Image (cartoon, rainbow, N blue to C red; front, side, top):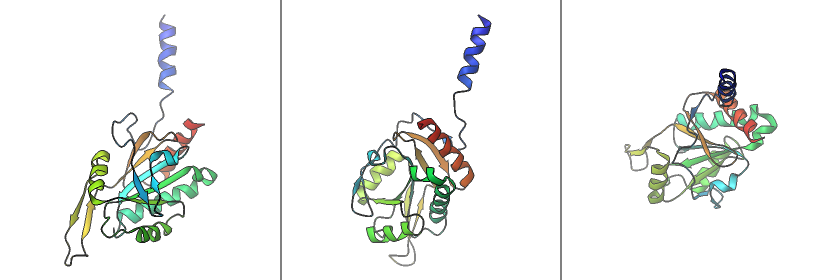
Length: 189
């Protein structure tokens, strides 16, 4: 009986992946979205079935966090080689007032041609942000158009079935994200 219990416990302990990011598997939020991409196409999570989706909320005039995050994700795709084609980067603007589809498209071109920027109306953005537990707030500048946006600085990572699995904090780095995505891709095979 003891040998059977021991075998059961060791079998169970070997099954759980050790992620660098925060494991939020089974979370009851951030399940889906209905947004428009920078090409004018309506998008939901179903559009990316079979891919690991990394979603980040930011804005194009962000001086540091947003471009750093998107550059890291572009580097992750390169490091993954052929598996990088199974990763979809999504950038959701928290500044729909200035981030027009044209601006978003040009911004994504700075990082990776496969990345998509998503937007919606300010009213719908508030609902999406609430569902994703994302904080954002306009911070007035010296002129009407020189404002900045305070915002959350983490990314949501979905598995190939469109289920939210991980939350990675800003500044974690490329290597831990590559390792986590490899684990998720391994689960999918």
